[in-house]
Amino acid sequence: MPLGLQVKVPVELSFSVWDGVDRESVSMGGRMVKAEEEMTVRASFTLYVYSLGMDNELIDLGDGEIEDRYHEVDLGEVDIFEPEDYWNDIDQA
Image (cartoon, rainbow, N blue to C red; front, top):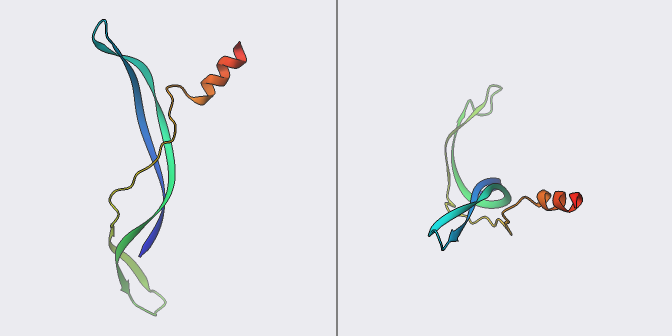
């Protein structure tokens, strides 16, 4: 059966630059980016139904499996600094 999902993916990024003189990687900082995406996947469920058609009918989810195991999430353009940091620098100038 098709299953619609709202996926939220947090990604922790770190940025560095290579220092050719000291021959080492120099950290420039890092940040977290959160991506949200809607996707449709195929899923299989095993349902157990007890007391079918009665007042105390019970439906129990026995097992479930999402068949789409790989999905690519586009982070868009990512910069070292948060976008708000650029505006703060402009406002203070």
